[in-house]
Amino acid sequence: MATKRKTIVLAYSGGLDTSVILHWLKENYNADIVAYIANLGQQEDLRAIAKRAKKVGAAKVYVEDLRNEFVKEFVFPMIQASSIYEGSYLLGTSIARPLIARRQIQIAKKEKAFAVSHGSTGKGNDQVRFELTFKALAPTIDIIAPWRIWDLKSRECCINYAKKNKIAVPVTKSKPYSCDRNIYHISYEGGILEDPWVEPPPEMYEMVKNIEKTPNRPTYITISFKNGVPYALNGKTISPVNLLTKLNKAGGDNGVGVVDIVENRFVGMKSRGVYETPGGTILNVAHRAIESITMDREVMQLRDSLVPKISQLIYNGFWYSPEMKVLMAFIKESQNNVTGDVKVKIYKGNVRIVGRKSKYSLYNSKLATFEEDNLYNQSDATGFIQLNSLRLILNKLKN
Image (cartoon, rainbow, N blue to C red):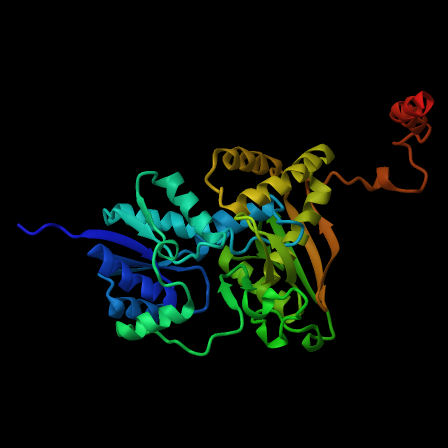
């Protein structure tokens, strides 16, 4: 009786690296390789990629459309939490990894695979993000990270391996930087971008127009939120994917959403990243605006104190950690009345709030007015200031 072959599920992108990995796994582990392709809105021909996987030697191919899950279960909760890493990065790559890895584990269980594999290098954050999710969801499954164990140490080595083994992958002239795309953003790093003094070439950008080429008239959009989640544009309810797609178009056409930063990687080094996140930029600004009239001051300050920690957990790959579960429960509770409409003006790379309204608004024009009113006794401020200055006075007298 023939022994049943082992199975490995590989996160497959269709490029040189994962095509070489697919062949290498099959050759070195004598296993059936299940190629798993996640559709997160990367604007690629996924059917062609699936055919390539079969041609390279995959026993089975899964093509999974995860766009709705991605936006609804990962992007929107992240926006509710106002998550921005180190003040600039909207975490578009980081937040995609736990979803990709979660579905990979689900497929591995279905296929009774003994191992999962990925194409992340040993220097980057993605290896950590994938593997922390694997271990959180399936602690006993084997993890194969070829870049950390094989003797292929460069792109040139992979090209030679592909030629030697007749692996048909489109090896064109490499871009002078690497690129990763999903429906939320595009990231660029490496190559010419490794010099933090060098300006990115204008032709690099795919979603966001250069400011010089943007319209000379502003675009106005009204975004409706319910419990901190956007659900409508200009009064029309729309699916999460379509909502983000339309905001990407509006923001990109108006030059919104580019950041160029040097960030601290979890693995210990600094790295330059350039990111396009047009729709996400608009949503973050609009979300803060609806919070400004609906969220209690102390709740907002507490939430804001947690933003660095939540952002760090997402960046480092701890989406499925116990502490993230607790923090996101608080975030969900904090959003209960964050409901209403925000009007944004998008023009020449800027997003400005020009209106906001909510039936849960805590803003009271009768209290806020500088004109005479009967609700606020200005003389009460004397005692308020005296009590709050007491420790300052005592500190000065002591000296």
